[in-house]
Amino acid sequence: MPKNLASTLALVTGVLVAGAAIGFYVRPLLRPELQTDATTTNMSPSSAFKRATMITACNFDSDQLGQLAGNIAPLVARQLNQLGAKGGIDVADAKQQQDNRGQGQAAQLAAYSRATQMVDQMIANRRVSHQGMADAVKLLQQSGQADRAYELQGRIAVAMNRGELTPEEAGMTLPPSVQNRMR
Amino acid sequence: MNRTVGKAGVLGVILILMLGISDIASAGYGFNYSGVCGVYGPGEQYCYGKLVDIASETQDSNRYAWFSKSYFYGVSSLWFHMEYNNVSYDCSAPESMHDLWNSFMSNKVTFFVVIDTATGTCTSGYAGPDSSNPN
Image (tube, rainbow over all chains, first blue to last red; front, side):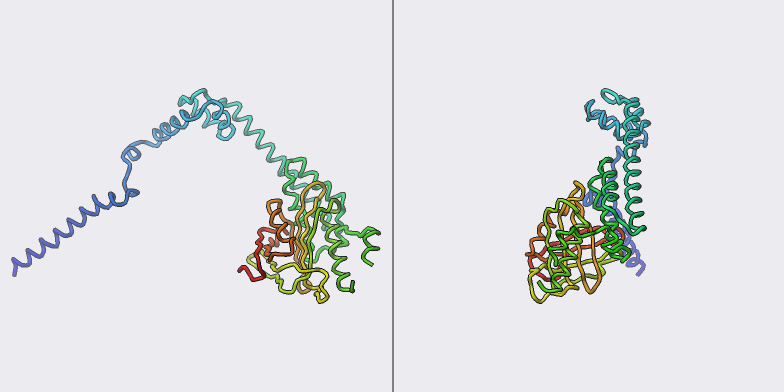
């Protein structure tokens, strides 16, 4: 009996060891995503960044770097230059591009906000005028947001759906020629 | 033209005036009997149905739909309006839905429009070949 017990224990242990070995060595082979990249794990974060940025820098020509400059932080631009980006990135130009874009976005936001205020005020006064709507749309057009004019109309739709604005209060009047035609 | 048709026609003209005010390109409207509007999801309503001939003698003035395509002070404007059980459902659509509006206005397809109740904009649309509910 002890001999049998020892044999059984040896068998169980062997199976467990074999299973562990298979799990450790074979499973990563079957599932490549589980494998660890030694070059990555052994590389410090700063080295990995350096490597990545160098690869990136090498793959862009000067024109592309110029375009990239407008989309990255000046600090990153400086770092890329330190890392030897081909042609170098004009940090001042990068900052200027971003400032200009920021100002453009702020101007668009202000124009849209002003346009919606104009429409909302007309709705609140229960008097939407053609001229008022034209002025609001013009604000969007001048700030390059003509494609958002439908959103201004949407505000009128909301007011009408809620019963807060009647067609007449929306400034809708039938011209005499149409009135005659409808009679 | 009977009285009901006249009333709906006036409403349609009013909508045209509200939307485009000038440069009306085209518009499609009609009464429909199978059309329905209701709650589609949180903050959303839907309307679906099919436009039918305005000249029908058995129309219901509380159930009619309207699609318009016009120019709003130089900006393309797409508008949907539907009357369902004495409730108005209006929305304006972005230019990206221009082709869909052409289909809706053809009076040959089933329309399905989702309205964002907070913004009053038509957030999506669907044109089907028949009047079955696309849901």
